[in-house]
Image (cartoon, rainbow over all chains, first blue to last red; front, side, top):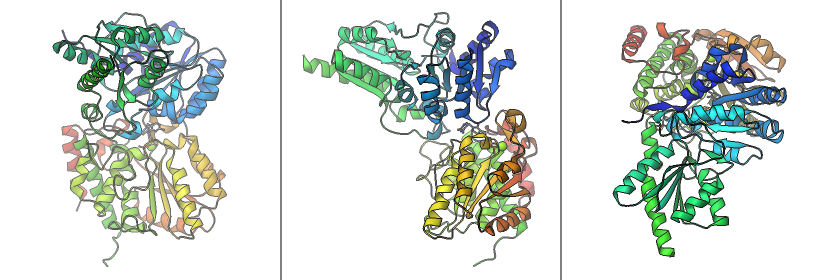
Length: 317
Length: 277
Ligand SMILES: Cc1ncc(C[n+]2csc(CCOP(=O)(O)OP(=O)(O)O)c2C)c(N)n1
Ligand SMILES: [Mg+2]
């Protein structure tokens, strides 16, 4: 049976609707994109707790901070570029520094946004958010995990940035498994190389592992859905086991998951490592598939890098 | 040199640009036709009568500058550039495709005639202020024109720019508001009210001209009037209809950000061809 292709934002909307029914403290803010971010699903069940801010993202973050300072649990959503970049300093002071319970949830992140082009393709948002003290950064692997993570961050007290894509893609996590913030999931056990992915790239890692298996290479696949705080034990254990690591993210290699893993490993357990992601570039218009291929974000790219890190490891020893 | 196009001819060019918008967004399978159609009459007037520009010399130092702050309506800008000769019209059909110079949102450096990059709303007027200020510093006579969406005006940065433009006496800055009263989530007054809009601009020290944005003569007159200002920047608030020119797109928020399906495409093309000479 092939896994269904689902959009994360649809499941974000479903989770918000559930929260709308179950948790009277939850309020949802949007900036003229409710139909796209799917916060509209919340508006349908709790219209009095849905706050339309207009095309004014910076204002939205300030309002969310004020609501959080007054006991509400605000979810503020827009596209990733605007959520992370347009109001970064508002998030820095009003949310992170004040350590307020605001959930900034971004959709339309990464190259798979497609034809809208570079202005709408967030490839820097994880870096921007990871940098902020007090901030938790979550990148769910698929729609089911987006659903579970939404419920989990509503229960967690503190600032959170959660990142999702635009398109529909196959699910790879169990539908009912509660999300644990800060806990990586081993999706596939292996011994020769570790593939650590987040977001849509977890699926690509699983496909890469299949391809590697056909060559007799046993890959361990880890879903690092929380980028911050990073599950250090999980990274350490898999690196110790395989001695060769590939990270994969639909994001710049500067400052994202690859950086987080590299920073940690190079301090505590230097390990041959390669990062699959975008390399100091903006995106462009094109279909999602074309762009993922052009910018090196496919299973084939992960396989190639797996070979490279295995070679590096074997040369060293 | 040939005579500048008269009112009828400008109307005809605007409708050709409307057809271009439909052709290109349909070929792309995505894009923003609604706000492109509402601005087509203005764009025809600007590119065929008002702007001092030379399509074969896009970097001409004394050219007037145009900034499309509401960058999602790139199709109508590309149509204006192609119709006036910046690049071949065939290229319009590459909109939003991999490798195209016609990016989903206008990208400086990709295509001649694009002065700045836009697509993230609310930033164009600031850039236009910078361009206008540079002209003033260098004692140049060029004008800087900036097209804003009415929903876009909800971004606070616009009002920072409005404050700056008045403070620096940028009388060679002319802004247009495409007052089609729609944004993605519906009517602007229901989403986040912008009225009383003229008073807001007045309060920031701007000259305010209110016109029917589909009346070519009024657009021409407003531009001429704006250029008479010796002290302050001018905003021309154009009352428009989103989707103007294609009956089923008019005032229909659904066509803010989606292309026609094949049936809609046929119907839209038929309507537009019927009015194009
Ligand atoms: C900063 C920013 N926030 C949100 C968006 C998404 N967006 C694109 S168009 C649009 C609505 C624009 O409405 P309006 O300015 O009235 O444009 P028009 O009606 O002329 O199409 C929105 C919210 C964006 N491009 N940039
Ligand atoms: Mg509008």
